Length: 485
Image (cartoon, rainbow, N blue to C red):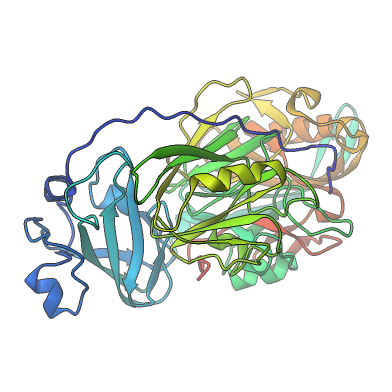
């Protein structure tokens, strides 16, 4: 379903208060307490062939590898015991192909074997420790075979008739126990691609898959309309409707999620600090539009167009600034693109500038909400069930089309049950009827997903509801998920 009237709201520039921090040497010595880490610049690092960017031998790095099984993601900050610091951290895989790591530090196993994770403190722009390059440590990541499936976490599917207001509805539902890993399944593994639901599910080794958020399905670039979080990173910003989010342990939450993205940059020569912001992520700007957009590796290898000014950031440093170019997105970085009047933002950056970015979350009322632990999320809506009661206000969430407000159509819905398990369901109904159906399926929180020809449900190795088109994005559940390389 395509909701062209639901436009993403523009973000206001975020202001940051600069807080002086301590040097990286002491910080890492105190923080890295549970991993087999080698400090860059140390004798051990030199023996291993690691680069030596500066005198950092004072950094203490205890032993013990980071172990992950296939299908199990881990937040490196949590696993390594890294405290919250001004400026945050930078992560990259320095060696090996057994795992990848996101900008936010989510470590994702790919194949059995080993990889070397490098972590360094991304110093605030007004802080220095006297060296040109911040100290860094390396930790060995060991990826093991996936654990055997737990029978207690197997999904349960059913087809049943549900009565609402004297009318009967044929419903296909799947119940997914709390703790089953869940991820966003993207068409062709990138924002802006499409793929058949069954193909995504089978490629990702999913036990259950359901269509996700709305997207451009009528001839334009098939980009999402709603917010997507994948591997703990923002993959797309919608800022309308309602979102469901999942923590790494499977705990789910639901809210009117709104995302704000901004950061700071410091000039390499003068040290002057400036703020920046972006209000879209991984989305193609319209011709002639004023836009500030962040592109991450989930977009693919390139931004996909040649307009405006692109600031290429790699490892927290501006690598180059180009105009009217289909820029390459670094695997260990991102690209900021400014078009129209927003191109003035690009003047705040210079090659060699240090850059950081932050994400904050609020609800639709502007109240801060803690979604920092969410690793997977899909935003669609409207909300249907809240705290065990029918609760629908589609207009307040930004929906204006009759296909959402009043019409009956093919629907997909998702709910959180009292025990933390998840129910996904497909049927043909109005939005209000879908809410009543989710209530009868045990949902205490519930929301609408994309529908119409997008409505689809896969489980037990086959389609229970077949979509009428290829899909931009999905939610995939499974104990042995194959993650995006």
